[in-house]
Image (cartoon, rainbow, N blue to C red; front, side):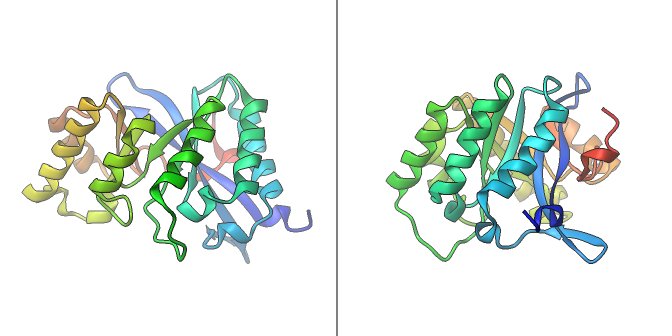
Length: 228
């Protein structure tokens, strides 16, 4: 693929704060623009083979080091059978490492029926993959949507970066506590992301949340820079 070098997955650790371990990595697709790398805005225009090859490159280097690798999909990507087939093919190659699909909060032009989304999630689950709902309380990942999808879900993520510095506002703290409780009730993992600095990290210690992600621990970066 001539354009293969234009795309690369950056990685970011997901950590357990209390036992100081890396529990997984989120893979974030980046596109080269000049000498810089930026987020990919139109994932669906990419040949699935390129996405698959880039995930395999990362996975081969992280193999056996972590139990799972998270890959972001919005609902349009989730309903693209070529992308689904590519990811299922990757999962077959990578066992026992597990591919986790992070269903993002992105608004998409297409509207899909809830039952169709659930059927697609089931297809992944049947292949031994897991499902995460990214950025709950934002975009299309509303509380109603999370409730509908939670039976098929292994994890939910709450993103502080969507609320700026308002982590110190009582109403945001209430939402963190609410979703932490929601996850516990439904027996799914809860990840708090967007920990940007030491002050926020120390503040979050008050909330008894062990699994965290954010720039404070590690910025997304190409795997070559990572000292594994």
